[in-house]
Every structure is written in C-alpha cells, then in structure tokens.
Length: 303
Image 1 (cartoon, rainbow, N blue to C red):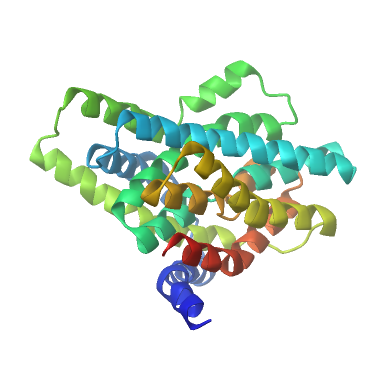
Image 2 (cartoon, rainbow, N blue to C red):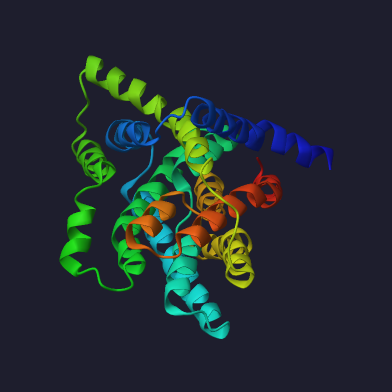
C-alpha cells in the first residue's frame, strides 16, 4: 500500500496539483482558456512532437508500429463500446456521446505529463506518437461521430490539415530520413517551446475542468468509465504483447491507453450538440477516478 501511495504522490499528485492551479486561475481570475489552448495547439505541441522525434533513437519501424497500435486501440475500443451501447439500447445521440468519451483519451496534457514523470524521455517519445495519432483520429473520425454521421469525407480531410502537430511529425520524419539538423538557435528555440508544452497543458486541463458539471445518465456514464479506465488498459496490455512491445514502448502504449476521457470531446459535444452535459460529466468522472486505476497500472509497468 505504501508503494502505491508513493507512486501516486510522485507521479499523479503533481499532475492533479498543477491542474488544480489551472482551476484556481480560471475561478479567481476568470481567465478564458481558449488563448492558452491556441498557443499550445499551434506552437507548443508541434515543437514538442518535432523535438521528441528528432532527438529520439526511434527507428521508422518503432514509429509506425506505435502509430498503428494507437489507431487499432481506438478501433477496438470503439467496436466494443458500440456493441455494449446496443446491448443497453442507447439512443443515437447518447451512443455518439459514449463513443466519443470511450474512444478518445486525454493523451496530451494528462498522458504526456504522466509518461514524462513516470518513465522519462524515451517513453515520452513513444507517447508523443500515440498522442499525434489520436489527435488525427479525434479531428476526423471524432468529428464524424459527433456530427452523427453528417460530416463528409471532404470535411474530415480538411480537419486533418488543420492539425499543426501533423506537419511537425512529417517534418521530423524528413529530418530523421535525411540526417538534417536544425541550426543551434532554431534547435534551442524548438526545445524551449516544446518544454513549455507539458506544464501549459496541465494548467489548461484545470482551466477546462473547472467548468465541468458532474451530471448525466447513470448507465452510459458507468459504461464510459468502465471502457476508458478498465477495458482500454487491459486491452492495451494484450495488444502490446501481440505487437511485441517491451520497455518504454509498452509503458507508453498501455499508459496512454489508460488515460481518462479527452477534454476536447467537450468541445465537440458543444459544437455538434451531442449530449454536452453528459460528456462533461464523463470527462470529469474519468479524470477523478483515473487516480484509482492509473496508480496500480504504474506499479505494474514499473513506474
């Protein structure tokens, strides 16, 4: 028990404390989280992805395998959630809401932070690939789900080209394949901005969670929590063995898969009017309950 408490205190508590600062800032300064979100989205996150990939020792195979793993995890969890939703006879809009919160995890501000604290930079490199992959899926497949199937393929492709981290990943691939290196001033600039990404994400997480209200239908809420916090990490562990992942790759794959529901789903819910009160409740509840599930997962993975 003491070792689990130590794992929580060393790895999870700093994340919750930093997010708590974001809650206080939002509450007492009445700060709009959108400007910070835009800076993270357009500047900090792309620099982090580029810096991690270009400075890592990952091979092309490592990169492709992790991205394939992340995509397959989303497909499998989505399929299981869809089957469970039909079993519980969820109506169409609620089914879309449960799918969004079960498939898409907080791989960015929560996941990258925890991987960095618990396992270090190599694992963080793998986790960043997972994050980029799920970001692509969120802004394409996620939008199609949120819009109840009304989004066209053209709209999905356009949304894909709006993700700066995608360009950073492609550019990082080019640098890896060609052996190019940034001039020292530019390299240090991207490193500096990338280092600002994780603490900024945690503050943003708190600012966004401040507006969440815990209310929603019991069965769908329970289904989302079970899928996101229990089924997903168990499935990820089995799938990581099938992929032959070991060490940092397995740590990143399982830990990212075990993250609570993504805060971005609340934005999609509001934009497309897909049970926004339920989705905010799901994000809030999975985030709070994740402390109970992530601590033993960290112990298992060797955190």
